[in-house]
Structure formats: structure tokens, C-alpha cells
Image (cartoon, rainbow, N blue to C red):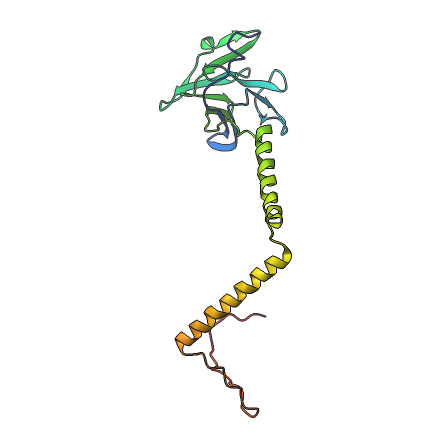
Length: 220
């Protein structure tokens, strides 16, 4: 068992990993704070598909959460560089790494960055902006939703029981239509258009209107 607070819940952001080939970024992964372990392997189905780094086992435990940040395990033969936020990366001597049971690691905080390099490949690890996942609906939330649905469904039933029968509702609709017609007639009188329209003579020609040509696009 490696030393450290492995079971302590960290109070910081997640981990952002970027894989570079030379100066070109080829892949990026974002791990939220609730993902306590980051596993890597030369496999597309791995949480972090990592090619080009010699890994002692697959999947390889690349990083795990601690109380202060992350414990990053260094693949054998990889060059390690470290920096604090705003500072340039500086190489970490091999004898400065923590070691136990043929494993080497370095502890980093959310204020620090780490770069692992193997040949032309480099993996940059830095703090992530990913936050904890939003929790789903709990049992009490479903209970509130069911109560609200029952309340909404009870409103029409309550209206029916209060005397709003279909006949009563039809009568109310008829009164509303009659009131609307009275308002329309009053408005027509106010505008002076209350006289009925004159019927058109049988021999009258229909209005041909005005022909207008608009620019457009020809459609075949």
C-alpha cells in the first residue's frame, strides 16, 4: 500500500490532460473531481488512451486524488517537468520523485502543472475547470412531482363537481361569443362601416389587381 491519504475527499477541481506530438496537441481529456482515479492504457476504450509511453501494466494508474490535489504516477523512463501557476516548466530530477514498490510519483496541487515526456510525445497535466456532476432526481423530488401532477389533474374534476357541467360550459361559451359580437358591432359603428356590404352585380368584372414584377431567383 502506497503512503498518502488515498481515501480523503479532495476539495479542488478536476484534472485536465493534454497529449502533444511535438508542439501539436493531438488529444485532450477532462476528468471531473469525482473521478478519483485516472487509468491509462494504449487502448481507445481506456479512460485515457495513452500510446507511446512504456507502461508496466495495463491499465496503468496514472493519477489518483489526494487531500491536496493529485498523485501522478510516472511511467518508467518518462521525463518529468513541473511548474507552479504562471511559472515556466522545470525538469524534476529523478531522485526528487517519491518511490515505493518500483513506482515513482509526484504530488501536485491545483496550483501546479506537470508534464511527462517520452520521445516526441508529452502529456501535460493541469487543473481542470470540471466540477462535480449535478445529482439526479432523488426520491423526494419524484414525490413532489407526483403531488404536483395530482394537483393539476384534480382541477378539472373539481370544476365539474362544482357545477361546471358540459351544458353549463356550452352556455358560458355562447354568452362569451354574443358579447364579442356586440363589441364588434359597436366598433364598426364607431368607424362608420356598420352598413352591410353591397352585393356585386352579376355582370361586373372581377378586379384584375395590379401586376408587380419582383426580382428573384430562377428555380428549375
